[in-house]
Length: 95
Image 1: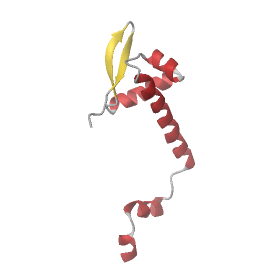
Image 2: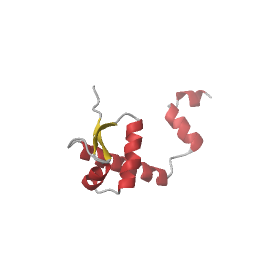
Image 3: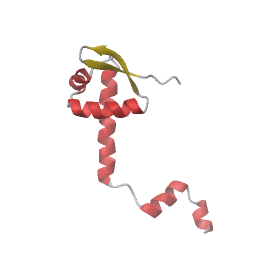
Image 4: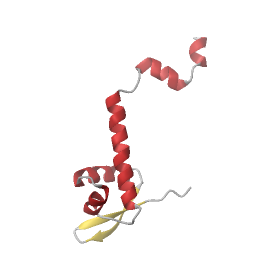
């Protein structure tokens, strides 16, 4: 028991449940790459989903899925209407 108290919580968790599967690590890495490409595109200014798709070199459904995730967590917001599309913009951290 005393030995377990000296271990860091993350180390104890790894011992109990094992390591993260490679497939999951690869998926997280891919999602981070996609969100990075969307963020880079939006640094140019507000864009529609088709514009982000072209700028990031990603399919529109992929852009939309990740963009909605980023919107949910306060990373992007709707900017203005552009024809039939909404434009999205980055929300800058105020740190």
